[in-house]
Amino acid sequence: MKRTKLFLAAGVLSVAVVAAAWGLGSATAASKPAVKIAFSAATPQVEKIPTILASDDLKAQGYPVSLTYLQTSEDPVQAVVRGDADFGSASASTVLQAISKGAPVTAIMSANSPAYQIVAPTSVASPADLGGKRVGIHAAVSSTTLYTNLMLAKYPNVKPQILVVPGSANRIRALVAGQLDSSAIQLSDMPTLNQLAPGKFHVIYDVAQKYSFLMDAVIFVRTSFLKTDRPLIKTVLQAILKEQKAAYNNPAQLAAGIQKYVPNVDAALATQDANTYTADKVWATDGGFSKKDIQYTLTAMQFGGFLTSPLSISQCCDTSIVQSINAPTAVAATLNGSKSSLRPRLHFQPGTYQFTVNDRSKTDGFRFAGKGIAKQTGVKFRGKATWKFTLIAGKYTYGSSLHAKLRHTIVVAAK
Image: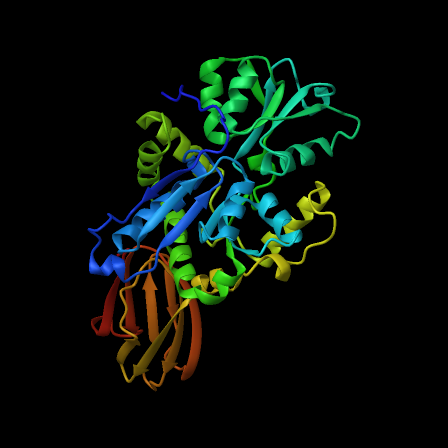
């Protein structure tokens, strides 16, 4: 398994990948608005892969897409505020703290839940042994700092030295060199640490397991952009959510994306990363952006010392776009006699649907069945019924309860 080349922080590194070919863009691409995304990482990381794959999907649809990779958590906020990017993906703690200080940005979706573990040499048995030790964090305001604070809050008498070392890969190098005694590192970097120092380090605090309900990183936009470009924002979030769902439905595709975009990862390690991240449910298939999710994160930030005064959900976040994406697709089902119909005519894709059944038959009932679903109104029923289903790929039948020959088949499949 190969992941030996580590990247040293040397100022702010910005790398842009632009989808449109200058002077050669098609009329379709030219007619669609640009999608500019800034990431808080100098190079692509595993937790960013669904968003990167979503950018590929948007390029295929004709959107000019640019991805910019920046070194620190604060850089994407500044890039979005300046207008260098319209979408940002960065630490929730950084973004929400910036909003609390007046930054004109709004969080619109969770990018991922925590993908970190805090490690130390095997001589450090637990966080209780970190007194006087050197503990590395990414930045003064970052997810690594929040998780370190949350860990240390359980050990109030432990007073380590906190050192800022930007980049998980750089903190690994510092751990191996004996320059750090402990640090939060990404899940994907644990194999590298074990490769460089076999058997010398272990996990003393599993953030991914303990705080799976927190938002580690969020997608955010300028507040003014939210007011003027909601259709584009919805299109981008739909693409990201599609890829976050695909991570669980097709881990081989996720592994291929990891190998393609994350530096120095071979096929075996990409598969291992895909399995680790999906097992820890790092990506929420519904956007992970309910009011409960947001409040958990705000409460943790305040507990961890990141917010000097309370920040309300309405002040920092707009949940309406994710809610509209997750809203079930409305389907009207009608039964007259033993003849049935569904409207509108849809290409059924995996997802949530709300069926409003209008059963007008005196001699039959309406039935919908397939893939773990078997629902019917009954022969004696007349009136309206509302059913909510989550359909997965496969075949379903609908129509007459009594007559199999009068049933129809729909196929649920991704486009």
